[in-house]
Image (cartoon, rainbow over all chains, first blue to last red):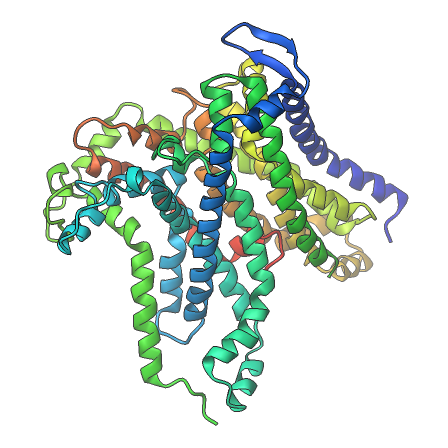
Length: 288
Length: 276
């Protein structure tokens, strides 16, 4: 149906979006690559020439690198485990018949809409403060010594805050997926005498596997670059320096652009590995 | 066999779900409650839940901080501006991909999605440098452009998904009945596309409003939106829980309301249609 004329019109209509995104991708990426091969210290001498792969090896061998990778993995892994497991349970619960389902759903989703700086600061001060925080009161109520959350249990604290932000997302997506489950299948299994646990394990969970994969992949991409939650709570202290936070510090705080850029290239590669898997799933869906 | 859901089980589900729902919502509720306390009540030991004298003094105090209005205004301009700009650029693109698809349409969509996966920190310095060179560091224009670019893939995808659902036969039928292209666009396509455009608008305003990497790193005093304003409370002086709560409540209230309207679009929007 499409004529030659409408094809070229279509191309013209697409052009602005494509050109803008192409520029947004290529220009900074090229610059990051360029800087990553230079010794470049804007505040201490500026451009000091080409250094080959030195920044790449220095970034990998610096004492902060492996701890930051470890921190990143713990935070991403911890948040994923909590949000996926609780998300599946919560979605299953919310799918049961009850009164006021819509209202409960609203309560559960709310944290997702809270801006990261607000949730981090509210948790940091009003819940995790060792003197005035609610958790401190709760600990005292049971006769325990309040924990200095953000220094003594810094990673746990960050994981708690970020999980609180992302649990709604996981729950909402898994709930949507559960609702598309054919209830006749479940009823048939029930009539055949399958207990709830088996119905869940053999029917519901396999049905959810795709949604769970999508949740994991999308969250991983966002979690790899969490920033505000660390910026306003610990500022990277107490072992909470993630890979992206380390790069941020190299670039903006110590203004070692070459080194930071090499780190940035590593981060881009890492994110792309995750992205490939996500894109495959999304791409399959596009054909359907 | 009768459906096995008895009233008793329904009551149990209800109690359980409400309990968990309130627990998850509690930090927000606590923030809202605290915003109406005096600073002294806010840190009372044991904590006070509702039996306190409600006051609006924190709100007046936050509003009187000479610059609050500017942060709010910056947030509105940046979130609204980047979304509207994004939609203006994305509508024709999504439109042509949905109605005049070519062999490359899928590749273009996937490539657009891939730009969304670029970790911001990897391009922080180039953007920072470009902003200095162009003189748009700490300006609303600069931030609007960046937020428009990071959300553009989502906008294109969401619109594409909506447009795709408009059946082509309707257009053909209209053409058969002698509708001109102009009439076709005004009377058929636009009304059918408006719900999709509206929900795209909603979700992206939310995403832009809450964005907290570029807004923190590319602004200082002039163009800082509410995300940065709240971050300034991270090194406070003196008693501040109640004021932090009041500022936070004002920063999240509009988005909570918008968010509740956009629950449905959230799923397909944020999963790029992979979960519907």
